[in-house]
Image (cartoon, rainbow over all chains, first blue to last red; front, side, top):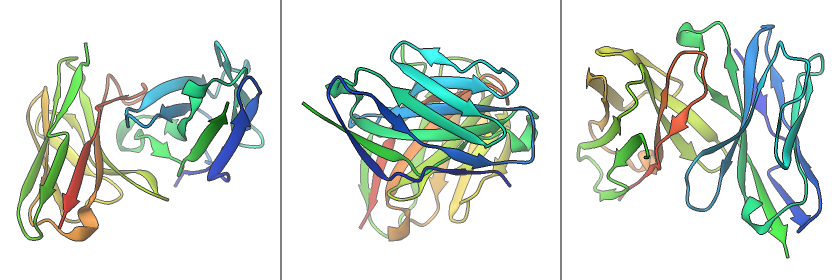
Length: 117
Length: 112
């Protein structure tokens, strides 16, 4: 079974600085998707970024980018120019591309990010 | 333009009482999911549905049942609520079994 590990329960960053959140996963599959979700205090789950495993290029969305290392099974999220609104819980998630009953999102336990003014 | 709504947003109930949480979507997505979120555990899948009347168990399904009689509605029922079911419950929808999820805003359930 696939697993997702976020080894940093909490992290802190100074406003305008850059921070990297770590995520590793375990799978025997070669085709899958990886996601980062943000959960601010409002509790809403917001999709930040999505990476397809067969794509070599790292996904980027404005100030958010990933470092996808397929061989190492690592999927870190980099937040540049951190803003106070980035303070949230961040979840890494995995989904197989083979669909069916295996195609459910598997989440890590989350990293709580604080942003200091 | 939420596309997915959960009700109620908050609920307090007593141990042993039945509770039903509702998830309603307007996106006509085939797949619907119920997760619970607990500190230190992330989100864990309770049940999911891949079509009307087609449901299956997830990782933490004990004590929960679901029903989906219409594409737009997915109900989660706690037959006899226990304190261990105090949690935040999220519903999610997905267009396919390979797409990302869209989440509802969650229901905070407290069992006293």
